[in-house]
Length: 366
Image 1 (cartoon, helix red, strand yellow):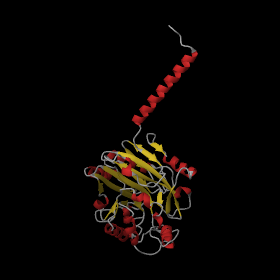
Image 2 (tube, rainbow, N blue to C red; image 1 turned 135 degrees about the vertical axis):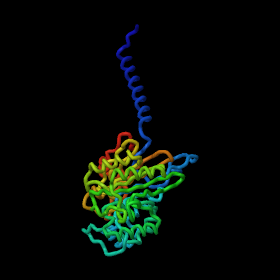
Image 3 (spheres, rainbow, N blue to C red; image 1 turned 30 degrees about the vertical axis):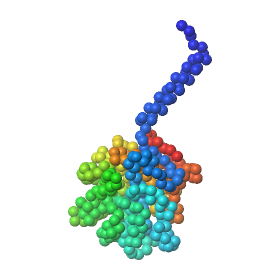
Image 4 (tube, rainbow, N blue to C red; image 1 turned 45 degrees about the vertical axis):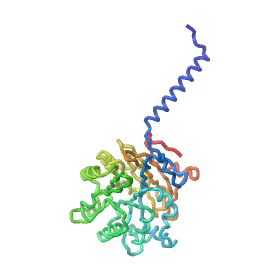
C-alpha cells in the first residue's frame, strides 16, 4: 500500500474541506427561511414585484410605527402650508404597497392648537382625506392617546375614518366593536387585523365595555377567542399591541408574554408600538414579532433613538410570508421620516440594525 506524501495529504485535506464547505452551504440554503430583510437602495416599483409574470404577484403590506400628526408635527404642516408635508419623503414607498397599516396616535377632532410640551393630542379632520389618498388602509386606535378628548373625541375619530373609508381596529363603541377583526382582501388573499392596548399604559376607564366606547385591552383569554374567530375568515392574522416601557431598548415581560400568546393562538405577525424606539424582532414558532417599530411620524427630536425607526414591508403569497424587508429611516424637521442607506449613514444604520437583533435564520442583504 502506498503511503501518501505530506503534499498529497495537504491536497486531500483541502479537497475534503471544500466538500464540507459546499455541503454546509447547501444545508444552510435548505434550512434558511426565504424571508429577506434588506435595506432599500431605490424606491421604485419593480415588475411583478420580483416574481415571474406567469405567477400571481404577492400582496405587499407596509407596517409603520407611531404616527402623531399633532403638536410639533401640526406646527410644521401649518408653517409650510402643506398638508402632505410629513409624507413628502415616503409617498413613493406608500404607493408601491397594496395596503398600509400604522398605529394612529391621536383622536381626530377639530379644536384648539396643541403646544410644545403638551401630551394631549388631536388631529384636524381635514388630514384624513390625505391619508386615504396616499394609501393608508387600516390603523390601530388601541393606544394611550385615543381618549385624550374623551368619548366625544373617540367617537368622532370613528366617524371621520368611516367617512374616509379607512378601516380601524382595537377600538369601538362597545366591547364587541373593539374586539372585532377587520378584513383587507386582494387577489383572493384575506388579512385579518386585531389591535390591543396594554392596561399598564392607560387607565381602566379606557377599556371598551358593554355600554362604553373604548379600546380593546390586552387579555390573553379574549385574544384567543378573537384570533380563533379571525382564523375562520382570513388567510393571515396580524395582531397589533400597544405595550412596553417607553424609550427602553428591550421588550418587557408583558410584551413578550402577549406576543407569544398571539402567535400560539394562531396569529402570523405581531406588530408592536408605544416604546417610541426600535426594539428587537423575534422569530417565535411559525410567526414573527416586531416588539416596537419605533416612531414613524413624531416630533420627539430630543434623542437619536426617538428620531430613528423602521418600516416593515412584507410580501404575502396565498400560503406564506414570502419576504420581509426592513426599511430604516430618521425623522427630520420634527415631522418627516427620511429613508437612510448604509452607504450614506453607516453608523446610524448599523445602530438600528443592532437594536433589531434579527433572528439567525433571516437573511440580511443590501
